[in-house]
Image 1 (cartoon, rainbow, N blue to C red):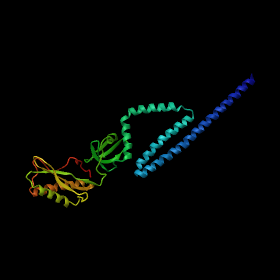
Image 2: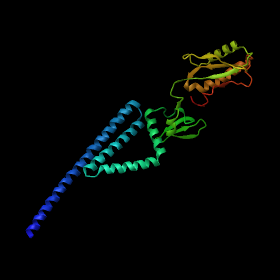
Image 3: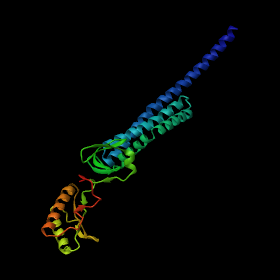
Image 4: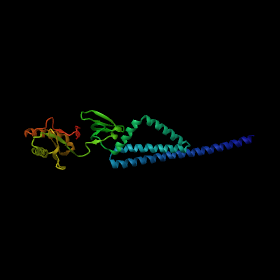
Length: 282
């Protein structure tokens, strides 16, 4: 009987040793996967960040992309290591997927803003200090976060606009181009001297030093109405000079019309067209 017990004890010990050896190999393989996988993930993340930095010259975007890539690769490496240890990764992925779906449904709007923030950081429709109009509001860009864009309005209010609303609408950037056109529209009386009015306005625009010669300015008749003749004046200026030049031209044109006794049409006034109603855009 003792010989039989010794035989079974030796066999059991051999099985345990074999299992420990096998388990040790799996643990070693899992550790190797983690070490090598994390090293490769960091290298790939840094390579992608440097490549994006060369293209966009933006350290914030590059670092954000590096973090996203590394986190994604870390998860892949971790799942591979757990699979090497015998963990049922299929069930684990299913649980993670279900949890992710639940969190996604609960944070649907926030995730949409997050995704929009990623797109804004990549496509770069505006940058800090640009004057923009987004989601029905306008202001100077103070900072672009992952979930919202912060603007400083013309009357010094801080506006936080969700990135989801920004990306889903029209983005107007008044600062990205160097030149802007001023659109002035006013009406003179039907009996006013049209030719003299056009010559007068043209001379005033040409006299203004901030008005560019290329592109060339244009002055002409926009429309004939029952109450008067609509005149347009469209000079081009540097974007930084837009509002100062606009104000000066409005004042000078009105004064010149009064001096020449050229009457404005009834119930009409000298005004800028409705497409440019955003103070401090330049």
